[in-house]
Length: 143
Image (tube, rainbow, N blue to C red; front, side, top):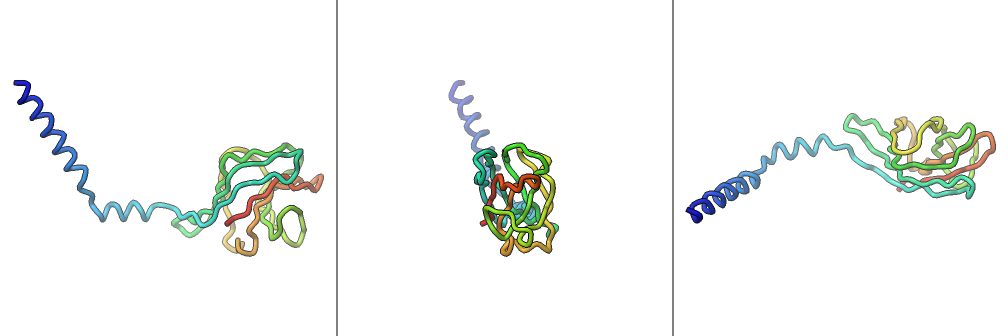
């Protein structure tokens, strides 16, 4: 009786394993087509000791062709009028070398749209900048 029970259990497990091994390649391709594409990434580095900045950054191309910047675990010091900029240069604010993306409204994980006309090979630095005191809190280079 014990042998029959073990044989039945093993047969059920064997059949279940065989069924799981069969993968429909077409459904696998469809699933892959739904995944967004990470184009570049970077990590934030503190540029002002009084405003420690950290977190990760991802440039993602969505399936519809739009691009987003995904900020993960962003932390930075507090300040008045803090902006998120994209810049040609690291460490310093230069009016002719930056484009304002948005006010810094969040910490943690969030997403910003990146206009398609911005060329990230020309503007590879994302900067957290305090306008009132002209201080760069931190930067991340998209690579």
